[in-house]
Image 1 (cartoon, rainbow, N blue to C red):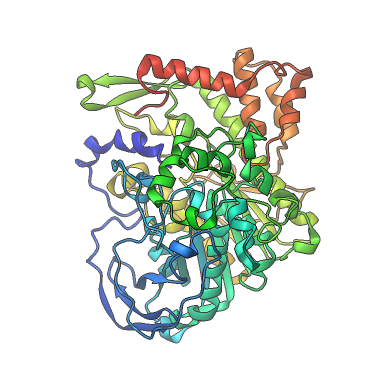
Image 2 (tube, rainbow, N blue to C red):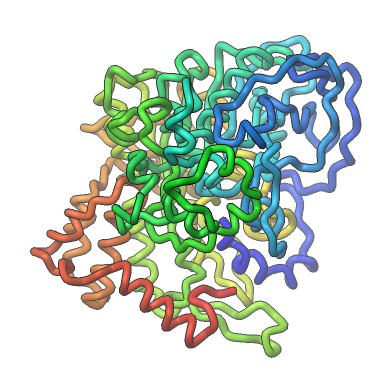
Length: 603
């Protein structure tokens, strides 16, 4: 998400002159104020609800759901809070330790941000929460499981319109949320032996919801988990772990993925697996710690920001250890395989989907595809244009369909094989962002990764710039209504209902129906299930790509979204790429771009 900074920043000089209203409730909202009768007693203490913001809802912010995972509790399962009966102290935007960036609202800050004391959640409910029992929607933010915060998202419009209670939650990130090392796990007992502390945080938050959400008008027997990107990936993780039985009843994965590593890969001692980056052995070496003789106590004494800085000094290509098949939270067979195991099936209704132009979020800033004309000696953002529109769109198309194949279709087929009988698929195609003189948003960004969130949330992201990306239009208003209705129906009944008056058919392996979320009047349903094998055959057909480009595209297809399929790369097109070291070639190209322009991506 940090890579949105240019696409967003490039329009700041024009946005100030544009007035917006309507599409997502653009009128200025009154400041929040304590709401009468909205002080709620929870096991965490008394939570004060606030009104304001232009919607008929109450919001409770920064409620702790577990003890702070710092000091001796770093890299341990979250501990339940001791009831205090005291007012919950106000906080200033709690977030977990992470690199600064736009996704957390801290762009331009040089040092890491956040604290280890970060296990907090927010709740938004309709104003009459005290007299009703509403469906609960539990949002898991994205950010690659290395960044992000609940503070980015305001689901007030969804709560008001669909009459649901929405919970948004923080969880530990990066090396604090996922770490495997003998010093940590070998002497631990119970859940502390896990490597997946971020997932354990989500489980603890769901347990807190079960015990407390009725106080906020929520129904603990009707909980829907939903999340985007890493949040969608974590939805899949919560579907396979044995620790979530009874904690939720429906699931939505938006642009999720299924990659996981073994504990041995996560440690990666002496770089046993040379294609894996940021294993804990490498991390501790980079942090100046002897990786094989360190103790748990000395690891927990490391400064959090110093450890994170070491983490980001290590390069990352396609895979770095996060979700780990530790046999405790994630089954030892791995996340992807566990989705197909009938013995682990929750058999709840599931929606999964992706965006038509997922990878445009990243490639749209890559100088290999996009060039920027410097203006006023660099005082203004660069004027952007595609170097080769047909090549860019071809690459975006195959890679994004690869995301759907590996992040939507394969998981849904696996769930069907495990005994799930209620599964639906979607693809988000809306691309009517407003172009301007500096950035042709519609051709560079299109229906990119994360652009669907605003239509579910009912509010633009990224402040006034977001209103520029999501212009006030009949199309935007109509699609917002369509998506909010479907998500609300699903939360209430376990069925998304109709889309523009037509039933949303289920996805099955024999009939892979996929609803298209786009402007009204166009194609609304497809029944195709692109497999990785089919996409690789398509990549072997004649195209405008050079031989090297074809190999790099195939490498991207087989190493992203799911577990890397290196053998597919080696035998693709009768071994055409067997002698091409894709990682080395990517590094070479990035180095040449950086030498010519100062960086491989637009700033």
